[in-house]
Structures are given as C-alpha cells and as structure tokens.
Image 1 (cartoon, rainbow, N blue to C red):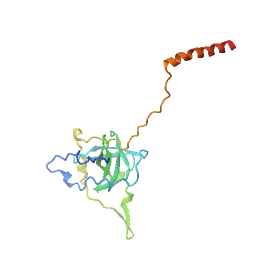
Image 2 (spheres, one colour):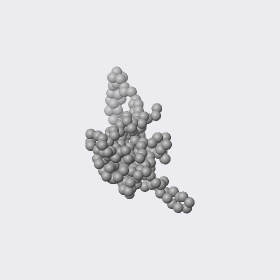
Image 3 (cartoon, helix red, strand yellow):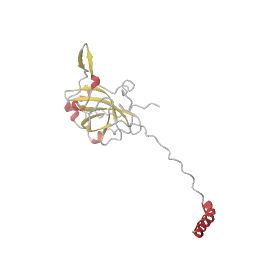
Image 4 (spheres, helix red, strand yellow):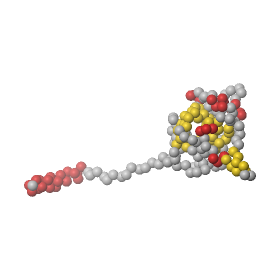
Length: 204
C-alpha cells in the first residue's frame, strides 16, 4: 500500500501579519516526478547535519553544519533524528543559500517532505552544469527568501516531529533450538551414565 503524504497536513502556517512564507516559490513535489536518481540502500553513507527549524515555515530546516558535501541523492540526518532524509532536488536559491527538497518517513512509516537550507559551499551540483551551443551554463532556480528569513528559529513547542527510520527494518526469526530433554528422560539416563562412569573408574 503506498505511503500517505503527510507533508502538508503537519505543517502549520507562519503566524504573522506579513508572513514571508507567501514569497516561498515552491511546494512539495509529486514523489513520482522527483524520485531519487539512484537507488538508496541502508549501506549508503549518511551525512550528519546540525541546524534548526525555521520560523517562516516549520517544514524548513536551516543547516549550519554538515559532516561532508551534500548533493542530490545524499542521505542526511540531524543529531536528534531517528532516521535520515534523502535530498531529491534543489528548488530555490539566494545569494548565500540553496534550498533542497528532501523526503523521509515519520515514525509511522508515512512519507514526509522537509526543505533543508544549505550554504552554497556545502553542496555539490554537477547535474546543474550543462552545455548549450558550446557554452557551459549553470541551471537557474527561483529566488528563495533572504537569509534573514531562515535565520529566525521556530520555538521548541512548534517544531515538527523528527524524521523516523527511512528503511524498513527486517525482522529475523531467531534460529530454532533443539527441544530440551524432559525430566523423566534425564532420570532414565542417570543409571546408564553412572554405570559408564564407574566402569571407567575400575578400568583405570
């Protein structure tokens, strides 16, 4: 059964008279349109990140530190998350940052979407460089809100639940153990064991 997308349901709007969230030019995409370009497996490396939820939209997370460069198809995980997110695509930029749409699962296994805001120097975008009439060009994206918008932290009580495990954890049945002998069988074996032991003692 396909996962239910809970990204819009659990994202309360920014409560302000002049909300900058209305200037955000993107929204969660159709998962069938932006699936990870390469298969993801539990053995893939996970990039650790540190950051905070954004007040402008609670499904946004501004990243202040990464343990390595991030690119499309990367697995990233915050220090207090139960599972990683997968970077699906880049959706907007400002002079300092780029916003990535990421997907994961909640603790119930339902699909969630989060938007992570990275500094430009922390990401790699080889897929955005393409050749047009002999000239290399860089893909252009919609303009993201100013950096100051993402700097405003959400209050702790406003934050969305952290992502859960992304991969299904297989349940292995424990190997069957041989049945233990019944007490009556042990009692019947005592004389023969004792006889063997005594005969061994006399032979010695």
